[in-house]
Image (cartoon, rainbow, N blue to C red; front, side, top):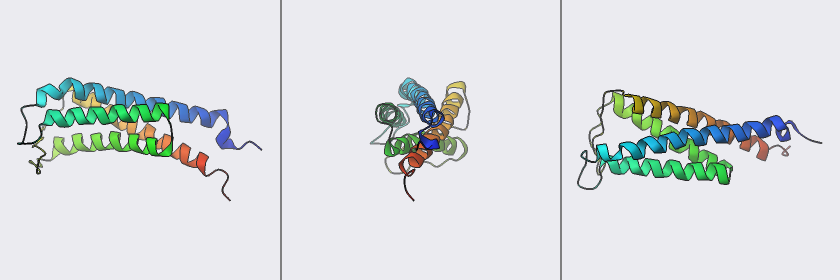
Length: 146
C-alpha cells in the first residue's frame, strides 16, 4: 500500500525544499565570495574576515552539492547548519560587539546594507527549506516503523 509519504505531494515537497535551500545557499555563497576581498583588512595574525567569508561560501557550495546530488538526512542537516550558522553569525555580529576570539577577528558591523540584508534573508529561507527537507526525509525514513 502506498503511504502518504510516497505520494507525489511529498516527493514535490522534498524536491522543492531542496531547490529552495540550494538557491538560498547559492546566493549566500555568491555574496560571501563577492564581499570577501572587502573584508580582508579585518584580521588577526592568523585569519581575516575575508578568509572566513570564503570559507562560508565554500561550505555553502558543499551543502548545495550534497542537497542536490545526494539528498539524505545528513546532507539536509549540513545545509541547515550552514544556512542557520551563517544567519546566526550575521545577526550576532550586527547587534553584539563580540570582539576578536582567538584567531577570529572582530567582525562587529552595526549596519545593514542591501547585500548583507539579502544574504541574511537567503540564509533564513535556506535554513527553513533545509529543515523542511530534513523533516520530509526523516518522515520518509521512518514510514515503515511500527
